[in-house]
Structures are given as structure tokens and as C-alpha cells.
Image (tube, rainbow, N blue to C red):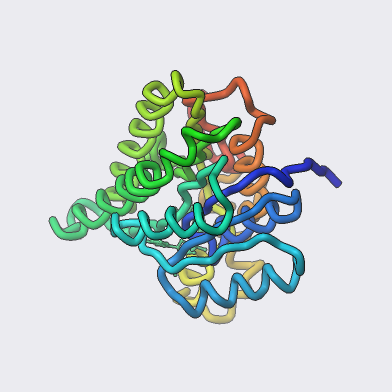
Length: 265
Ligand code: NDP
């Protein structure tokens, strides 16, 4: 099994109570890092923290209830992380969810909500944790983005548009922060098994279909070359690479984690 010693490393992960964020917390804890996670729902957050503490009894874990669209809550998350661990090396901007809607059925309010979530989920944590990153010896920001940024889908028009903006923002931050030595990169997700897909599975038309049958048919319909959805752990591995010195000469880049869903060169 791959292993790396991150015992002097501190990581903050937004949206750490489920799916990709939770798998990322697990992978960093397994590597010895101190991990701070946030999410909105206190019950799910506490359940995730308890699960992680059971799996890693000596874990240095900090769980804090915060909505990334609320600047003050994010500042409080950063301050409490500073108090818990004394600094930060890696920020993982992961919190979010997709919106299924076409141009015809996306209201102005929905457009605004989507832009707010996709852009401020990067802006607020990056701003709040910046002083801590500036003091780190190996600072990095990893943004969990979507392949929709480069390959938009008409049935997710607002998410695709907002994701393209987030990708542009990631690149601008990489350029602006490079003189400070802060690297900024992204992973571009295709379809990864997680809370979002579990919720869509629960709302499926044909209730006779099992999770395996439903996801396999979905992968085939979407044209995913590897024939299956990704696992949260697979996204977490790419995040760990971009979030640590393993990728010390990489900034402003995006790693595709889509199983071959991308059609462009
Ligand atoms: P999950 O639904 O499993 O997890 C999302 C996490 O983010 C939860 O911890 C959730 O907790 C938290 N979250 C959502 N909104 C907020 C918010 N406003 N403030 C703080 N926390 C929030 O989803 P995934 O693991 O699949 O998604 C992770 C990221 O990957 C998201 O940004 C998603 O859009 C992106 N992505 C995922 C894809 C996939 O196929 N899975 C495809 C493309 C992109 P709570 O609700 O309690 O706040």
C-alpha cells in the first residue's frame, strides 16, 4: 500500500462529512496529517467525525459546523483550526453539489445561488485560510471541480457555467499566489459515487434496479471509458498528490478524475 509521512502537515477540507471530502480526510489521517473538516449539517458532521475517530483513535481531527457561502462561519472555521493545530499547509476546497436544470427551467435565483456556491466556496475559505497558508513551508490549495467546466452539459447548464468560472478563478489564484509559493490546482471530477449519486439513486424511476445495476447503466449511458463510476478514494488520491510536496512543481493545473469521460485532448 502507498504511504507517505505527513505527521507535520495540517489540512483543512470543506465538505468533509461525506463522499470525496470524507475520503480525503481519511487518506490524510492515514498518512499522519492533522485534519480539520467542515460541513453544514451537524448530525452528519458528528457522525463522520465519530467514524474517523473510531478508525484512527489517535487522530488529530477537528470538526466544525460551517457553511462555505457564509464568510463569518468560514472565518470561524479557520480561527478554530488555527487554535486546534497552530497553522495550515493544505486547503481542500471541496464543499458543494451539482444542480440539474436546463436553461429553460433555471430561474434567476437558481443562477445566483449556483454562482454563489461555486465561486464563494473557493473565495471564502481561500481568503480566511490565506494568513495560515502564507506561514506554511509547503502551502497548497486544491479545488475539487468538475469536468463540466470544460465539457458542459445542457441538463446542468448553471453548474457547467459556474464550474467554468471556478476553473478560471483557480487559474488566476495560482498565478497571483505563485510568488508566495502557494500552489493552486484542481481535480476535475466526472461521476464519482457519493452522496449526490446516492440521492439521485434513491429518487430513481425503476426501484427494482440495484445500486450496481443503476450505476453500471449510468456509466454506459454517459460513455465512461472505464465502465464504472469513480470511487471517492480515487478522487482523494489525486487530492493528496496535489495537496502535498509530491506535486511540488505543479500549479495552475487540473487532474482529470473522470474514468475517460473527457472528450477533448
Ligand atoms: P457529497 O454530497 O457526498 O458531499 C458534499 C459535502 O459537502 C458534504 O459534506 C456536505 O455536507 C458539504 N457541503 C455541501 N454544501 C456545503 C456548504 N454550502 N458549506 C459547507 N459544506 C457543504 O458530494 P461529493 O463528495 O460527490 O462532492 C464533493 C465535491 O465534488 C462537490 O463540490 C461536488 O459538486 C463535486 N463534484 C462531484 C461529482 C460527483 O460525481 N460526485 C461530480 C462533479 C463534481 P452538508 O450538506 O452537511 O453541508
